[in-house]
Image (cartoon, rainbow, N blue to C red):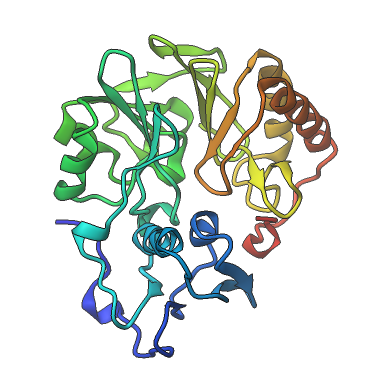
Length: 304
């Protein structure tokens, strides 16, 4: 069984002859990350403002459609069949985007991290599907499923069992994955495997963690992300379930220890910059976060 949308959830509307976004859109930003030159935000949801003009752009629309957790990116004549599914999608030689974002994780991105041994690690979870598990495992045996926090824990046990992998979560969010077999405790870094370290970062949730790999890749969960609006690293201050004050303290404690080029969040965009530039921006983000005050949850205030 997968967590595909049921037929009853299908919208009744159609919109012309080209690609469009239906009314189930939750404005999660995933489609805009994958097809930014064709999909934009309009009135609190995604909108296809330009049809693809090249094969490469057509592939971007398919990627957006396969990633969308509500299956809201649609075309009346193009069906989402396995032969046009681009996922897992290589971001470089080491990291792949899983796609197939899950409605049980609010549409969060998940990733596969390839290791020099030929194995892989899964960071957070796409929607559950045995067929997708086969696709992901084709990149190499999956040894670990690393959960960044409670919001992204859905399907972790099913993927871990399917792969015969270890399932990791921080004790602060253990109630979201009580059957996890490996716990991260306290606030000290924990080595997950060669070249991969977990850094507890309480703030977004009590048990938020980021995973740093090879001094190159930072899987930041929902602790911080790249914003296309501000062209900078940002925290989702208006969607902080535990404590923005604790997040500021976590960044102050952890940021000086981190060195990476890629920020790879669950929500928000991805970005690669030289390590020195990323470190400078992270230091500025740490200083800005220190000035933030608690505020009510407001998804509409996030600056994607």
